[in-house]
Length: 503
Image 1 (cartoon, rainbow, N blue to C red):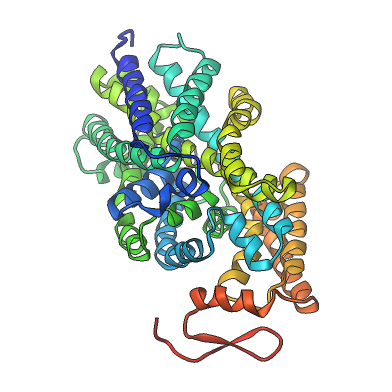
Image 2: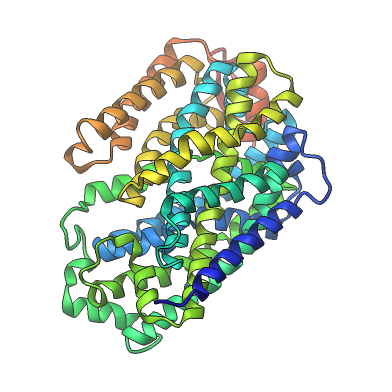
């Protein structure tokens, strides 16, 4: 395709996103952590719905998911289970997290952990471990964004230039408007992604499947190569063990941006309403997965699987639809990149720098905004420019590390006896094993490295917690008054006993 129309449509979207992000602050001062970090806890249900939905539907939808469908087949549907679980988690835990933030002044996940266990060290460690997954996710989205500009320009915009352009645009409006910029841009991006995904999917199904009914695509695939419709897939590299443990690891990762989004809501009821609507948005993934399946028999010799939707578009679709696909894919990438960059900057400032350097809240708020630049320039940009091969694997590796913080949440919501030393020991042990099974011995027995980490992490967490002193009763009682209303402390070992089922 030689037309420049798709490139200008895509670039026009980028300009609109920057403008919306800059205007999102609407004259408000962004000097406080609460305003820049959690939008003054003021987002309504529709805005929160689109914020969470668009933030969780990323470049994976337009690049990773079609790529996995193209190479691995039905294994791609692991994300359906994961996202369905995310909606349930938001409905149950979101209001409790919001109440923690509202009553105790938390603006980050690490702050809640530090408060619950009376340990700034533990809060900082949790923030550092979680940042690995967050940065991996940001890298994944940045690669997707840059590659879109590269493809839509016909190769005239190098990937490294695309990385710098996208990160600069995000940095400008994130610095200016913080979480409000993420809310406004994600609302716009969310609507655009949903429309584009279904337009592209239906067009591809009509063109290559013989009709709008997606079942015809699966019937064709069944006749040509049914291996794509079962595990372990056509390449035989997606075992039941790895597929299942990848789902478990993804489900147990309480990512910091989601925590921050919950705390940005105007009320607990707002979160539950938004969470109830969430599954209605996740149908956005289905048409792009179908495009990946179509690519199996229409583009059999594709060099890079993650580009199957783009290659199909560039070769077959009208220029206006190609341009919308470019804008939609860029929207998907940016809508997920923004909250992770914002979350890492906020966590590094609040959970690590503030307790270490004894900074005031005002100085910490300034530092969080300034940290966007070194995080992007020294970490995200260099890794993204290196272009790691498999976008989905980047995410799964990051989630494996994030899952090791699970003991902190068990003690926050379910077990009053959990101690800071138990959580600390579990995280260190689980992280170390996950690191070894990621770098040295990759996923032994076909089981995800993060799952192996949990198998060591959780027993150590329980054992060390039972041998060490838990947090003070005052802290435990105020947390569990929210986490488990109707329960009260019993005995001197921090157990809990039910007194009522009302909430």
